[in-house]
Length: 258
Image (cartoon, rainbow, N blue to C red; front, top):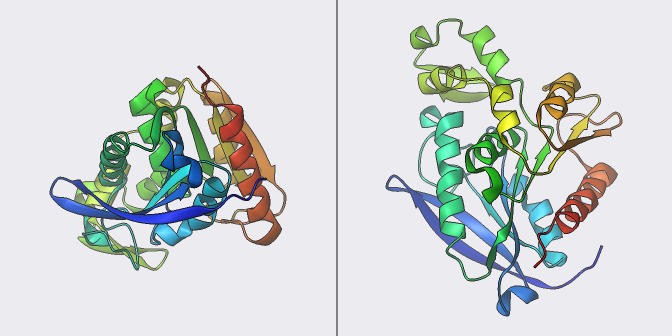
């Protein structure tokens, strides 16, 4: 991997009158014109810091990256909203709004715009890739939480009658989460996304079974699954460094050339 310099720029975006807080990680090349760009989605209950290591890795390699907080997305966010107002569909709306705003930035090469997500962020990036189709050059999903809908159905068989607030992984969610999570099937969305997909998943993940990604890679038209031996839900140390290297290589490999 190359190690170029980069700068960080704060940008607020907006969705339905609510503010989205995020940081651009901009390589030096972005000063001279559009560069490949990745929009990074954090997981359930956390914030933009969840994706910052990869954002830095992209920027060091000449790729712009926007790491942001979902509205009501988790603990320590600077975006508006509370977790009890958040669902997979509200977060999908957030990402689509971020996409639209990002496309207006002079440093963004809209022909080479990728989506990236960890855990629930990988679920959201998958949903939006299916919605945007070929507008998204490629999708990277790390330990994507494709199990969250099955979990929601098991937790709340009648979502309309779910408690106003319940706790999942120690974090509060509202009834809207249960209703929206059970309103569609993410696996049915996957065939709609034609461009390259990279899935990285730990074989010892205790939160999202590895089998969820094995099923997904069969449904995307153009996907590759990389197993991370003995890794749990999230990558650290050598596993994270290797995932950064693989993600950068994936973007480079799939750039649209003139």
